[in-house]
Length: 267
Ligand SMILES: Cc1cc2nc3c(=O)[nH]c(=O)nc-3n(C[C@H](O)[C@H](O)[C@H](O)COP(=O)(O)OP(=O)(O)OC[C@H]3O[C@@H](n4cnc5c(N)ncnc54)[C@H](O)[C@@H]3O)c2cc1C
Ligand code: FES
Image 1 (cartoon, protein in one colour):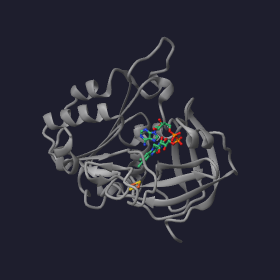
Image 2 (cartoon, helix red, strand yellow):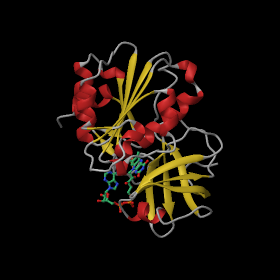
Image 3 (cartoon, protein in one colour):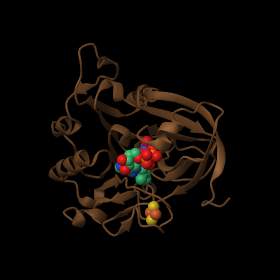
């Protein structure tokens, strides 16, 4: 199988997560690391990089936010329809090297999708890691993703979820959600940096603030990993569209250890 040639795969399951977000399970069997991505295309419409948000040899799950031509067209498909995929690409989270650590998994909005790949991986390799904390923030109750998986995450791990704001009648109780920015809620927590690594994915403003907070709590840059999103075309290190501070997001990332990027943060 050539990783650079798209192949046609069937959608096994399609369901909505929120008004502008859906998940699909596709019949694509391939080895991959949590944090890698694939290129998804529809003939005549285009191609988009989408993170793998599962960890399975039998199928692959993707979570998509509808923001443009490819993602909106994908959102109109149904079970049994076919899409084109190539990959997986990029560098994922170095889960093997991080064995024995506590894991702090911090996501905002759609940024929770690539992190779900880590959670699925940990589910299958639970004995390799210590405490698992999941901290997820969403704009509102209507934007909460992965409602199917959340009850299980709540049982197995330390889960904290917050929404930026809530309206009267919003059901915050279901996942013991609180209102307020995730960053503000994390400030109040006693987070120990010893033998702990943090994985971050979400809007850049949130990521920058949370990195600052983690530093205050004693984290070194080598203990922080983030998944970056950049405009992409080839995903093969050829077009240069995805460059971030001299690195290719498609080859060197999308997962970077913070010390790989921090010296460039004021560029
Ligand atoms: C490594 C990687 C992993 C990703 N994983 C996911 C995922 O799991 N789920 C998901 O929904 N999306 C993911 N994205 C973002 C997704 O690829 C874009 O939203 C998608 O390319 C939009 O394609 P489109 O044709 O629907 O939109 P277009 O019609 O191409 O664009 C719509 C608008 O969004 C802007 N835009 C497009 N791509 C990006 C981007 N990467 N960053 C910022 N603005 C952009 C365009 O400039 C335009 O203004 C990922 C991106 C990268 C690089
Ligand atoms: S997308 Fe072309 S170089 Fe990375």
